[in-house]
Image 1 (cartoon, rainbow, N blue to C red):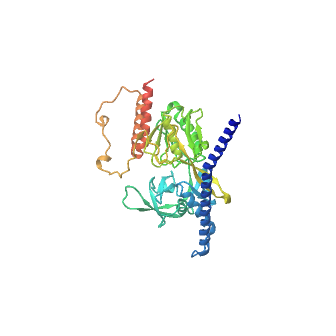
Image 2 (image 1 turned 135 degrees about the vertical axis):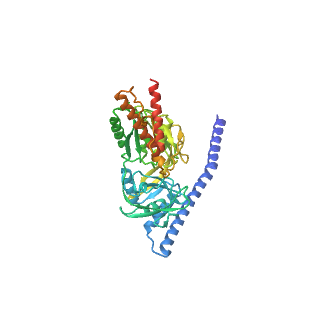
Image 3 (image 1 turned 60 degrees about the vertical axis):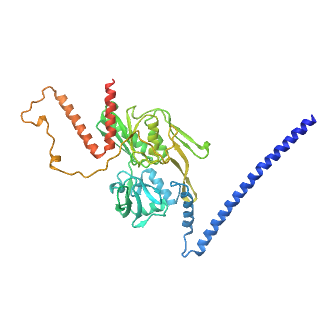
Length: 444
């Protein structure tokens, strides 16, 4: 028995020694790391004091510290940044759907400002700014080397004032200037309309108004069509939608799904991940759905497109989306400022991350560049048919109702042809819904 006790004690001592031998270097390493951090903080303090005392001009100490904070955050990724009290206030206004500016969503790439997308009906949209444009100068001053917030501040100004931005565009050999008049940006998050028998839902942003606008738009258009049975399908147009609130992206996805995962988020700590699921109810009542995306569709737009695509609830058409698959948390700071920090990546229901990859459409459809039409005598001359010939026989086999129906169908076909010249991607989506409707009717 004594031998056993001695052996157990020896084992315990050996375990303590082993733990001490392993933990000792780890503790020393941690202390060294902490000492290095404190040394770096002391270095920051030394540099700050040197600048205050010896810089050629007096410095604004508050701005100097804000610049240091913003530099630290912006070194992490393009979407983390410091928000001054004014910038934090502006961001809150944007999520409510009204703010002042040009009406463009931007990011930063290779030191320059890159347009994610112009917002519908804004001065930038009217001036012809396109997704993928690079802004290199504002009023003749280069934005190279500035933070994104600094560049955005240069583009802001009083409503009614002019700003000239220099744009570099793919396919255009030389940079060119665009003059834009600043205005108050009032965003209508969702515009709904009937295109023949199809309900088109143009979602331009994801703010507090998005889901209520969507729900109301669907209700009004279905009533205008004469009931859901008269609707052949829905087009959810997310092109050039830069994103916005995650909560609204979840609600819009849920509007067309009865069950299943919509999106999940995963941070550095696995325990901090979240999963969001759909609830019963489909505002489209199971009608076919087409989602339109392009390179200007980012963030919340990609969450919606990815969820509906993974659940096979929608056919996604267009071109590859922007590829912003990260989640930013806005953390209030003392002094009414805030910190926008990337805290997680989001994943579609199938588990794929969209970060830097984007959503690939089921059917790739490019939007052709609009070329000026050349008018000729032949193009102005209407086409001739049998009915135009003198003395041609009349069609006496049709009733008045049948004639009226043929005329209505012809008018719809002509409107679709006109839409194809104006917006090829949307016309393609509507054609698909027509085909699906025809197949469904044939199968009855």
